[in-house]
Length: 273
Image (tube, rainbow, N blue to C red):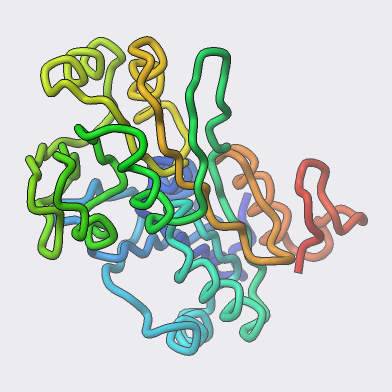
């Protein structure tokens, strides 16, 4: 039973991912916790999680630091998209300044298997530079926010899939497909055939919801340009799934008398701070 004299511990989830919604759904019913999920507001109709919700940016690490202090946050979870690097580094700085424990919730990345023809790059600019040598009909699944990196490519034709309609600049020869995962292998096979795709471009976002395109590309012998994800900020512990994140949250929000003696829980690669 929660201590009636102690207010609920406040957990702030920087969300926008499936893992963030699952984590909020698990934590929100717990009476000892108050759960707030922050969404960036870049998607017109986001899937809203359980618990309290705030939408919009914080104003950089300084703004997030103020929010953590003003709202008495006891634990911060960075469950943003693996490529949302700016907010992840802001979270690391804010958590260190406000002395709030921080955990990164990151789904495991994809790993190439037998038959995959992957061309791994470190940025969207590198991905664009690799395309002329690989094909001319491109299935681009890197999101609408990065299309400017491909806008100078006037010869290839692009099929761009995104949740919301993109805004210029973007490639001149382009068709937009508005859709949201999860996707099936059968559906991705049909898409590649119908549009005569000969190159797939994707970010290593991990998870199964959008992995079907990789299987379809491997079966069709299509090369895949994979943009590697940026690293988690130094010193930030990482959970691979919501269950690990729940374990960490319970450890750092428990009363001091109930906490285990050890300070580095099994399964996390970095010490807690």
